[in-house]
Length: 231
Image 1: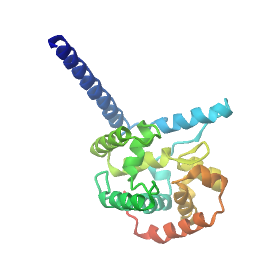
Image 2 (image 1 turned 90 degrees about the vertical axis):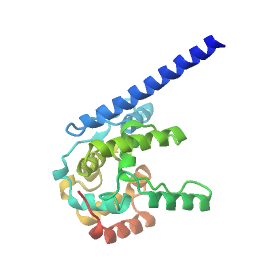
Image 3 (image 1 turned 45 degrees about the vertical axis):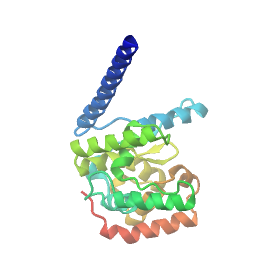
């Protein structure tokens, strides 16, 4: 029994050391990305792998552009649509999460998330698309680390450059060219609001660009953009 207890203790220590090392590696990458642009994300790599199952030579459409070359209209539209309290919270909007939980309980299924821009970026950078308690806990830990080492401007800059906006389309520049034939810097308020409306289900809206719901959501975002606070 003593040998078993000793063995279990060493296993626990090794597991704890591995966990700390993994979290430290994430923190180191977040610190690096304060001044260096990530070339890809875990979600981008996962999507490319799936696309290549049907098209082995496929490539993602993605081009990094600095914060200054992304339209202020798109910044306001994204904040208005995804995270109205982005400039004020420290990674989590507890009120939005509570409302999402209540809505999901009422519907009996997941219909709302309540995730902030920081949480979404944490998931996209490092995690798979699975919905598990471990993944949500890890997402929260990464969000805390991200908010500690990056300012809001940098978080929004990376987010706008890496989120999915269609089938194999990632980032504001690729999205602007894919849907409107223009650069991210030139997006009008209406174009920006439309892109923001697509974020929750971009591949669907890439195939179905004229749905009544998309039109309504675009108008709602347009009406809210004036009050959006961006870094």
